[in-house]
Length: 268
Image 1: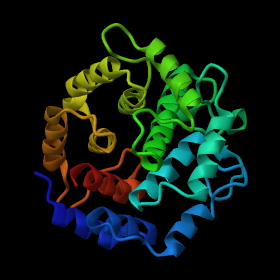
Image 2: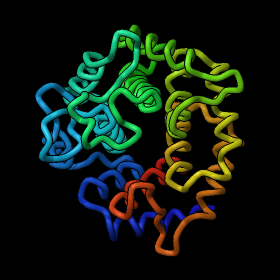
Image 3: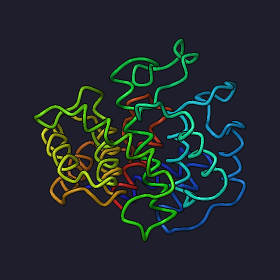
């Protein structure tokens, strides 16, 4: 199984102040110093999204989702910065319910965020819809379906359902699967969400540690993962943990701490 103490030690040794604050909240629920939140919010654009790079001006859907993830790990997925981010996501949603990155980002966007690419469109729609759903349930936990951006999320869910193949697979990147499952579960497409989880279970043996961690954390965050899938994911994470306590990121060593924090979020 996962060596939690070793993972904690890795984050303490290699994490920056924001990452160590995320660790404290995940472990004990300790609220971060306001300066930690301010450090994240400082990069937010006037429109409400975050750019992919510190010196960039155009906000990115992928980068904004990453920042919402960070704020969630700090217990701060509500308040004015989050409201601005959600409002921006709703504003840039396309008429068919999808999200795409701004065309000006095409020269620097990774494959999963390439403007105009169908696979990237499905991934970003599932990603944006997932984090809007999580934020809405955080703000209104008594509601069965998120209300504030209900029409935006309903449109996104309808479009995602229309992309699913009869066997439950999807024509996009692997990570689109668990984010779509969260979005669809939140919109009460329970059958489709369950089908996605079955496919993810079949693909688990070939997944990277970073993908397994992200999947398990997302399913646990929405409380929709079947016990067998989460247990299998945690077992696999225990088998792939490094001797220094961390896990390999899919984006290179600079993101290894973030992947390790994602594992801790999945296992708490």
